[in-house]
Each structure stands twice: as C-alpha cells, then as structure tokens.
Length: 554
Image (cartoon, rainbow, N blue to C red; front, side, top):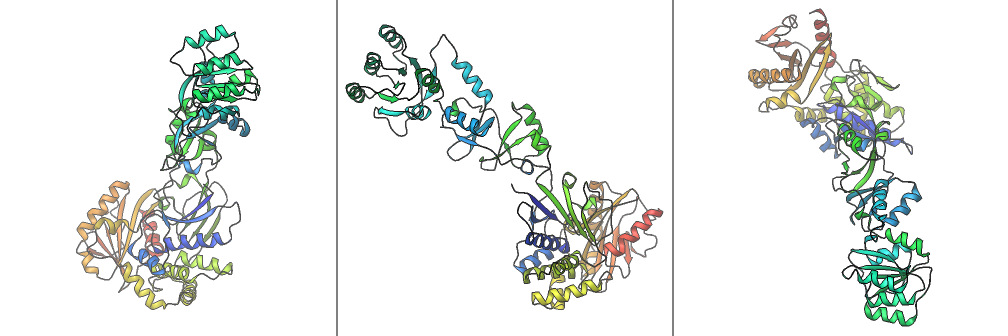
C-alpha cells in the first residue's frame, strides 16, 4: 500500500471534528507531491445525526470509519514480491529466484490465490530425495513441463493433449549396453519411464517398443524418420534436448510442478492481522518471512521481522483535539505529522517535531478555513458548506460565548461560497442535531463524550443540545444510571452529562459526585444530582476550565 496520512478528529466525533478532518485532507492533497503520503480523512466513531445530515446535504461522502489504529500487517508489509503458478516447473522457479535474488516464492493457483511457499529448504529437501543411489529418480511431471524445463522441441508429440495431467515417472539414463537397458526396463513394467539417451538407435527403438512415457534425445541429436514414425504410431513422445546427457538428466529432475515440493504447511497471514499475532508466526517460520493475503486469499505482499522494525506506512494528523484520551486508540504507534485544534493544550507528546496550530476560536473549521485563505484556495461550494456547518455547530450558530470575529468572518465567507444563508442553514443544522427525548440513554451519553484527566483525576463529560429540556430532565434517573455504567467501565472518578438548552443558552449538568462530593459546590442545585449552569453552553471554554480549577482544589 502507498503511504497514507490519516486525518482524525477525536473519538465520538462531533460535526466540527469530522468536517475539519475532511477539509484538511482535501487541502493537503491539493499540494501533495509524488512520493508523499496520501491524506485520507477518517473518523473513530459513528456519525451523529447532525453530522450525517451535513454530509448528505452537501452531497459528500463522509470520512472513512476506522475503529482503531492497532498496528496491522498492511501498515508494514512489502509489496515487492514474486509469485509463481503452482503448475509451473521447479526449473522455472529456480530461474526466477536466481534472476531476482529471491530466497522464496509464493505459490498460487490460476486465480493468484495462495497455496504454499517455495524456499531454499524445499529445494534442498527435493535434492536430497533425488540423490538416492539405490533407486532411479522419480518425478511428478507431464510432457509439457519436461519440454518447458529443458527448452526442448518435439520430434514426435505422441498425440498428447494440451491439458495433460501430471503423473509420477521414473527417469532412466540409458548409458549402459542394450542388454542392461532392456533388463532395467523389463523390471518396471508398471512404471511410466522417461528415457534419456544419446545417439543410440537401438535403445530408442526398444524404448518406443515398450511405449516409454517420454524419450529425451540429448545433445541436440535427431532421430531417424523411421523411429519417428514408429514413435508416432505407438503414441510415444520424443523430445530433442540441446543439453548434454548429464545436464539433461539434472534438468529433467526439475521438470516437476512447484506444488509438489513447496511447503503447504506455511500459512499466509492476512493484511489486517495484528502485528502482535504475526510476530509469533514469524518466529516459527523457517526464513522469518511470510506471504500476505487479502480477503480473497490473493497474495498482496510479504512480511518479515525486519519490516516490522521499520517505520509504518501510516502517519496521523489530529484535528479538533490534542488530548491522548480523546485520540483514536493505537495512535502511540505512529508518527503524528500535525495537530490543528482550538482547545486547551494537554499532555500529548510526539517523537518528532510537528506542525501545531492552536487558536482561540470557536471551531477548528474556522482554522481550516484560514488555511485555505493562506493557500489562496477557494473551497468548492460543497466543502464550504461542510466547513460552515463545523463553525455553526460548535458556536450554536454564532451565539455561543466562544464565538470570535474570526468565526463570524469565516462563516459569512463560506455561506457566500456555498450559496446559503447563515441563519437559515444554521437553523436547519441545529434541528438536525437536536436529540430526541426518546433516544436510547446509551446513545445520548456516548455520542459526544470526551474523556479528561486533571490532577490525576479522570472523568468524562458528554454534551447534548436540546429544545425540549423538560423531556430530558424527566429521564434523569435513566441518564444517571447510564452515566454510572460509563464511569464504572472507564474507571473514572465521575461521568457527567451537560444538557444545553439552546432556546435559553443555559445548561444543566447531570452527575453523581459520590467520589468527589465538593466538586460542584459553586453551582446551584436544580435537583438531586442535577446542577444549573447559567449562561454556560460551551464545554471546552466554559465548563472544562471550571471543573479543572475545582478538581485542583478538591
């Protein structure tokens, strides 16, 4: 696979996160040079109803869903590999391995599906089996493979078919006198014989008489027209080899399909197998090399221990977050190329210097829009609509206390390009994002959940935006129960839900604070485990800083 730079927003992505990932990938690919990674927008969670509306409304395919970045074979494998069809000869395989200096070949069927592995160990085993002085050499072959291995020509084809099956044959080199040769042949009435002879018409004639499977004439010698005609009538194939008898004999032993000597016990690994799983398999393999296949079992590459120790073909850009807890799982295994965010700066560390753009604005989409301006690139109308949605969703249609002049300026410009009204599109957008009071409690909690850590205390904070506030507050017991499930599963000190009343620009916080009872003492208690947050609508700029300060004093 070519090098890829995935652009990820945070887990449980909101609209700003997803459209910013799309926008950055789009911009980066406009200036991509040959050999540089392809930028692909990705998301580590399902789309919210609002985000789904945004992409459908713009007629754009949303970023690809990738649940995690657990190291996989496809991120490290090499696509520099050779395969050979299982019906090809060992001689053909030997030629390929020597020509390209390969120690192994993946053996495949006619549809390129993996069957077995051919390596030097298999060659050595075949050679040892061939060097038994007590027995004549046996090969599994057919006339076509013999001709191919020797580069021979037919003197008589014996009427063989194009799809001739393979069969086991015994090779006899006719170097002795006629009597000895006859004795050798007569002792093997049931065996299919491959007779290698020089200019010995008497030997050839007897081999034809006995209907030998194949007669090979070495040294490029020809046979008499009479013998040729007799062979034709008897259905015996005669081949002319340009090599001497010794070389012809050796090459004849290679006239066997690679499938007969390759190691079928070597299992291929899948492109999506985890590196952890494959490391164990590599240690057990003879050459510490394994073929890689796709879902159709077609060979797509190779993997070795040395490849696993190199940099993966994957790098990552982060948008709309910079906290490790909010990043896609497995990100620690890859190079982070850049971070573009509008939240507080946390403790995410990188192995190498990165481009880090952090601005105090209402949305990351505002920053992405500025990057387009700096590059003197006008976004396509569909992209402008996406970026506008990111700004409006994160600023409550420019009504949030987090909104800046940069957000407003960008929103007006993008609306003009997209051909929409900020107010009208904003209303449609917010309606699409409003959660129904009938929604599943789990979905309400996890759809826009973020995890934080302050002064050694971990907590989660979810947010939903609503118009019918009372309907949600009436379900507070269900929501608190789900919050406790999340707290327990994530092993955090507490989990809270921020319900934002869009109509009045206030919020209510649902939270069980048994673990940290004094945390919210400064907030009015609206109901048991429900706190009133007057004028607070922004999680990142208003509530999180307050919670961080309070946690520091508890």
